[in-house]
Image 1 (spheres, rainbow, N blue to C red):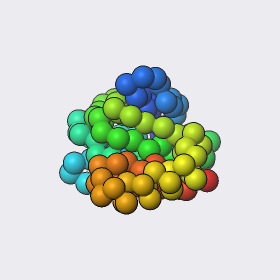
Image 2 (image 1 turned 135 degrees about the horizontal axis):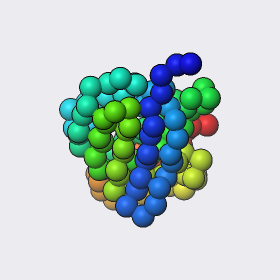
Image 3 (image 1 turned 45 degrees about the horizontal axis):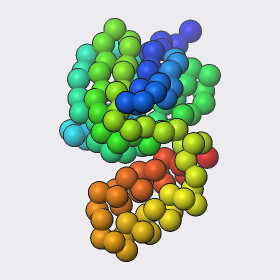
Length: 125
């Protein structure tokens, strides 16, 4: 049996996803990071971006994450996000409208959030 890591993706208001995985890719202030079983312990700051989780069963879970922390030790990975939503919870049409509105209003923060949501939604389908 392949090595696994236990992953908990938690937002401020709820547990978004929890389970066993073989790989997690997330964006940190130091750049993108991939965490596999046996990785060195780490603590980092999450940037807004999609988080990709390769599940034990071979599936893929994608979430839009906006800020927070990533922590890994003893094959347990915690992603503690300010805001997080799974790709299948995101309405693509709504995210596209949010992106267009943010661009029209020249709101770079809203544009970044909408872009992350749209990338996560389309990557997870």
